[in-house]
Image (cartoon, rainbow, N blue to C red):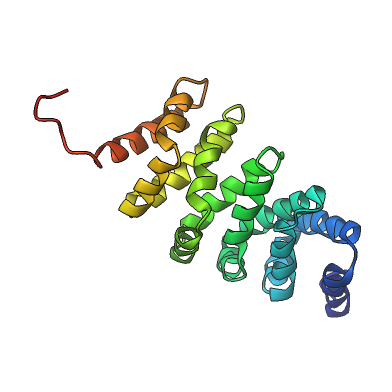
Length: 219
């Protein structure tokens, strides 16, 4: 049905003008479209519609309705799982939206998906630039390193994202240390985290250690 331009236009209008319950339901529909192999071509068409992405990003910033924000996070994550959609998502503010969502909903079930999507978008130059320019990104990611340690994938994505960011910026390294990253990493290493999380945590600690000169006494 949505391959018909009239029906697709109706979906966009409903997404823009519907109440939060309607918008939440449409987010679930968009997630289903993006995750089904049968409708991935349709997902690419939808992701080219700026108005759709703009509404989803605005819902990520919604403080008054956590279910709507969570549905939007799931929809954006599903849309960004297709490589062809990532540039458009970044251009329409998905990075800032996901960081805002994580800052408000770190305990929600979709936090891990949001972290995974951020790590994916960091793989693109435009995505990395957007994350580095976000004033809250480092603080939010540091907070997620150990908070989601019961969800091993969440820790992996938080540490993986910070590793990418810290590798290219002394400013980010210092900001992360000031936000408490060292303690978070040490707590993570003492937990039952995955081997990937431990490997990346050790790599990040080694990178941070290079910030301080060697003590000539070897202590």
